[in-house]
Amino acid sequence: MRCFFVFAIVVAVFGWIMNSTFTTWLPQNYIFDGQTLGEICNSVIVAHKANDTEILLREVRDALAAHYGPQFINEYKQSEWVFNNAGGAMGQMIILHASISEYVIFFGSAVGTEGHTGVHFADDYFTILKGQQTAALPFATEPEVYTPGMVHHLQKGHAKQYSMPSGSFALELAQGWIPCMLPFGFLDTFTSTLDLYTLWRTVYLTGRDMLKNLIKNHKF
View 1 (cartoon, rainbow, N blue to C red):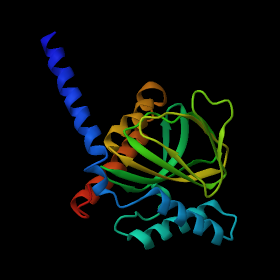
View 2 (view 1 turned 90 degrees about the vertical axis):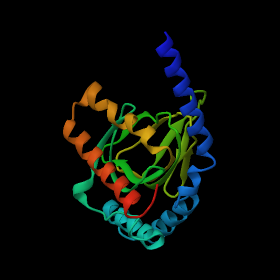
View 3 (view 1 turned 45 degrees about the vertical axis):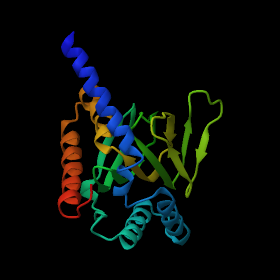
């Protein structure tokens, strides 16, 4: 009983520190912001002529690298796309940036998906590039509808149901305590998919980028 009490105190203090630094120290490490990413995406969408999703994604990646610097934005490589199973939804993602305080990814689905957003220690900005996303809070009777160029902001601690029809893709920015989000993306491996190869690839690609940005780019 005493050990449980001590553990509860440690968890409470740790949680208080994380919550306090979420709005004070942690934002000092951010280099991205949802509004700027939305503006970059919209400029690419307007200029995009070919009806080709991969070309659109590559153009968005190049625009991000031009704005923030290629040292912070990974190259677009088909071999680095991985499946993502989380909250009952299955999609595809590729990591453009991962650090302790924020990540930027392309997320979407060629066949469509639906599930739970999860509850995260981070703010999430989801800019639709192709297709659409619908979402709803638990009390909603009508869906929120997000189409290309629109940004869906999921606030820290909130949860929604969401869906994306086939061929929908988005640029996702998450800012906060990113390691706290990782279990949400990993647990389905052990409870349903047993896709250990995808888990390994996800851990490797995420860890590689976090270490690169921490050591080489001095980015927390």
